Amino acid sequence: MIIDGKSIAADIRQEIKSQVDEFTKKTNVKPGLAVILVGENPASLVYVSQKEKACDEVGIASLKVVLPESIPQEELEMKVEELNNEPAIHGILVQLPLPDHLDEKKIIEKISPEKDVDGFHPVNVGRLVVGEETFVPCTPQGVIELIERSNIEIEGKRAVVVGRSNIVGKPVALLLLQKNATVTICHTRTRNLPEITNQAEILIAAAGKPHLIKADMVKDGACVIDVGINRVDGKLVGDVDFEEVEKKAIVTPVPGGVGPMTVVMLLKNTLQAAKWIVEGEKK
Ligand code: NAD
Image (cartoon, rainbow, N blue to C red; front, side, top):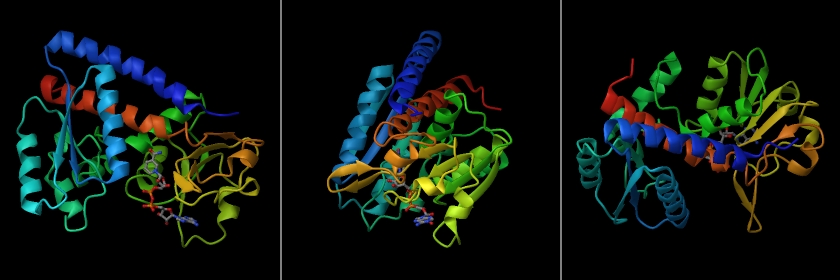
């Protein structure tokens, strides 16, 4: 079985659109997302225009802030501060990676945690760890939605996450734990990876290594979510050997799996930010 991320993302987009309509009717406020783009990284340009388009489709106002590659750290921090204080903006996102001379960590810490729709600010990471309401990073949140909307129960399952990055592996593992899975995190120093992945009823591949996960590393009937995006000979491939693994497991394709979910979760977080700021409903 294949999990169709594109179609699940389209359903969620519709749901968000009606929730945005309802919110705007009730409060007279349009949720607003500011996306800061520094320089002209080609991949970043594509991601930012996808985000703008997606906002437009659901009735979220988007503000693209394009800044020169050479911008000094202080000026970028001032721009973030300005947006922190801008009432029409509820969510702020800094498109990563930033040019080398800029301190990414400091910039992220400058974003008000209440507007940090990427969920990368240490305050929000901490809230996630202790299980408080917060902005959950978009890709990990998309992974969980894909599993749940495919009617795959997480509770009590043996879950294995391959990858321990701050933006994917760790938050995915935390979310699975919150949903009462028994979670193992694997990384580059893990010994005998196949032995561990073979125990997984839910396997999340987030290593960024093309076709790392072969069929003999996957348990029969497992749910395999492929987060990897790798370019091989001009073609996009995941971390999972899709053709072989698909024969024995439930799997997401690349492209068309996790990818489309990420931007939809950003819309969800932006609406959530607007609700928390305008209606103050956060506990
Ligand atoms: P990263 O490079 O920061 O982290 C990779 C992790 O995988 C590391 O923790 C490393 O220890 C582990 N790893 C690498 N090789 C391994 C191996 N052979 N065995 C075991 N563990 C190994 O990458 P990231 O930012 O977490 O992204 C992971 C992948 O997900 C990339 O391909 C990236 O492009 C993709 N990604 C996709 C989306 C999306 O929207 N679909 C979003 C973010 C990242």
